[in-house]
Image (cartoon, rainbow, N blue to C red; front, side, top):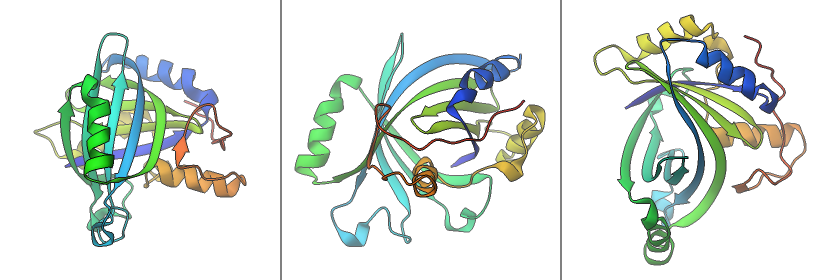
Length: 214
């Protein structure tokens, strides 16, 4: 089970956001990483991951850092009784593989299992953490997303999130309850941009205008 909350800001806010989280002595800084994520769908309509009945995401993610790299297969699914909540609770399953096996994994998924590549996106992720929370600052081509996720195994997850929102001076009413692709699609519609299934930094992207002002 994953419990988290998200906020979105403009790309110009990146440095200010990073410095803000570095000012909290309770948080450790893990570093900044490049990530490329591919999202697949099931070939059979009855198992459509994107259907309202399932509402899940099957992903392959490659992460590259200065010292370490990794690759993960993940499954995330929204829980029906939590869809409208600002603090998200989602089913999550993760499997790690060796980074050098990434190409063979994609070959198996696409050519053997015939999963369809639906979306792909890249971002840079900066990670802050302690025994209670993990806070990530994700740099997408269209803006910055801050995720605050519970990591405590002994405390109530929602209580941990609310406590850290208070410490960080974030208003939960400003949180965004959907995923990055929902935010991206909304921005495209608002700013008359084409919704791309492959989202890269070198493309013509809409932009979030909300400024981080802590």
